[in-house]
Length: 260
Image 1: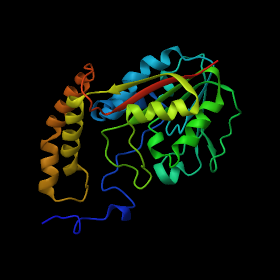
Image 2: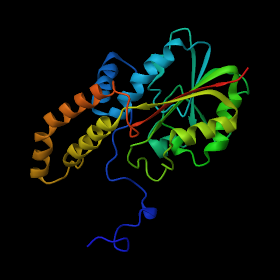
Image 3: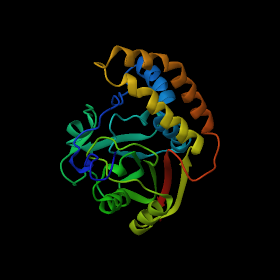
Image 4: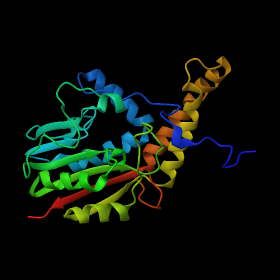
């Protein structure tokens, strides 16, 4: 019988049982094809791409991507936008990213001057920040007056990059966090709905048999047999992103502005 006393103490966890491959930086047309396939099977990534494709279409001036990882959303920016990606120096050890044209910094000192950026992009990062309030203050400080913040966070997402995954935010907490930093014109929208979340969770179950390369052959065969189901769930989940209803979702897309 499973009880609180007999289950694993997750405080002791140092890694997750299944870690999906890290995103690849865009270097060729083949990378575009792989990324498009991943967005079909990774509804978190697909939903964020769908939202940011529209939000970033009007970006201009100096764009700062904070916690940029593999610079996944850089291709969505117009050509006249001046892109700059920064990340922590320990991003490779923690998250597996080491991109040549990313600026890596130590500690909490960003190599960015105050009031020097027109748009700050920060995608799927805030949940990995131990102290979010000072971090959001820095997002505000580096923006010029009138500058925009574009932010995404997960909600119905598994514990990932263990142990460096600390928070799940609600629209209420995001609004409070941003307002206390000085942001205005805050808009928080849901990525997906209960149908999307159900597909996302069912897809995760389908991937379990394929997650262990050294697993039992019967388990591997089961995983292969579930591939058509996986594809169907991905299609349904992607189509469900058109619906805006319910209080459960994959995550949130947030825009805000530093007042003039």
